[in-house]
Length: 168
Image (cartoon, rainbow, N blue to C red):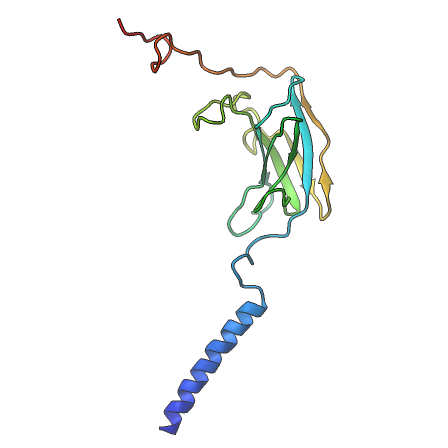
């Protein structure tokens, strides 16, 4: 009987040691998050601020973290943006990234077209490549000129129907 109690005590000791080790080494809920550094910038397209445009970074060499997070920012009315990866304005993990942008005609509509027609929306067609360093990073101002923009679809003359379709 003494041997059974010793075996059970040893099992509890091993479990306690594993839990203690996990907690002391940072295996908590947020241990998977990478360290981030502030990243900010500004943008204009054809001399206009692309308010509410999405500016996002795609990692070039390896994922940002095990969740493959994608740092992004939303352009403010003054043309500035500050990147976040996990929380508002927390920044971006160091590394090399493709800087992409998408400027929807109407952000309230999920299927709204990109005013830039997807020209800068992928790694292959990125606006530029940037390196985020282990410090505060301020990107050079982005000024796109001569961009042909996609406009909002024309409204139908009959409410609720696509253009060109009418009820008689």
